[in-house]
Image 1 (cartoon, rainbow, N blue to C red):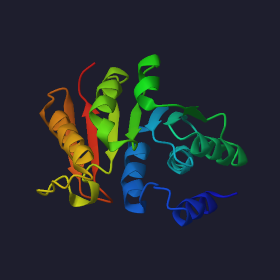
Image 2: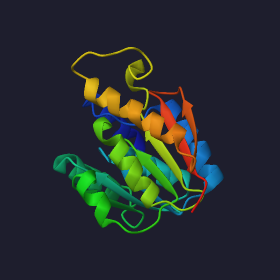
Image 3: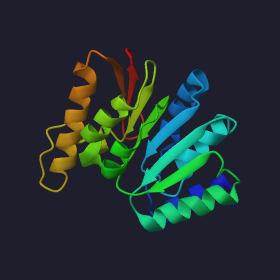
Image 4: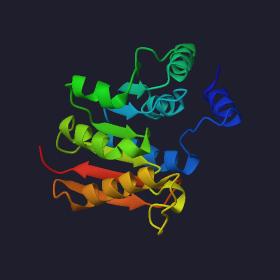
Length: 194
């Protein structure tokens, strides 16, 4: 099992994984920052965690939380097949419930889970950060809906919570934030204070 095969299978099964251009930008951030601990919200099949670990020559420890039990199990299998179980720990559960039980500090956060929960995830990420920690939020522009006057019922809650997240990270003086129009949008925030 290779990382290419994991990616291919996810694409064939329509499992959302990180877009290539988003991954390229995150790769630059990881290479520059050299984080030792990463927390990911939304494991899916483990593809992004595996990519992050490889980018950092496996010189990193990643905790990743996945709600869906089948996907969590598939991620655990994929991680084992690639011999990365010493570097990547999959936690199966609801991130909203799991996060308050975590009390360690992380260098990088990758938020790619329930869009309607991004503001909650941000509060927890800040709590688990130290000065210089980077918080990445994927799909922040959500198919372009977030910056448009989109107001259809189907996605309204997710869109409103993503708008709220953007407001929070751009108004909070403790954070320095850039919203990048790559992939489906990526918010990059750096914690400026302890």
